[in-house]
Image (tube, rainbow, N blue to C red):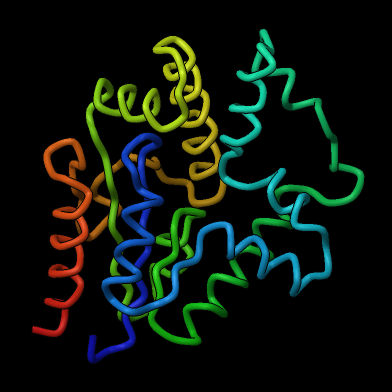
Length: 209
């Protein structure tokens, strides 16, 4: 990449987006920020990373924990720990957004999720990618990845997607899965993860031609 390209990677839950994003960063030789972004924001603003996680775009690890404990209602998670008296989601989002802009100014990188496509939309040399897949593929992927039953995988996908869409809508005013928001959309059900990385890498490298 001759220019300072920052890649933002948005994804439906169950598309393998995190692994593809990590592999894309390795192929391009650039750092990848996923949970690392939360850790960086927490260090910068001197707060526990757990606070950043509680107001992150989604918290699938908490949902998986609930499934393992047979929690009957995902809504119970909302009241599991209330940090509203310490910090609100708008504040942590602003911290995340400032961290995203700072990271993007440092050099080429891959930023996974967290509305980075919107936050950096006016910045030159940003490539926004979106990964999607059909529902059945995502169910199968989540069943295998987390060793869940079909019904639990469906619950996890639906809950995570609703949270992710709500978060994106709140902070951008746009629909999360609207393909017009992105430079390139790729159906990961139709390619292997390795092929997905090759296709995305080629697209990014072709931005200079």
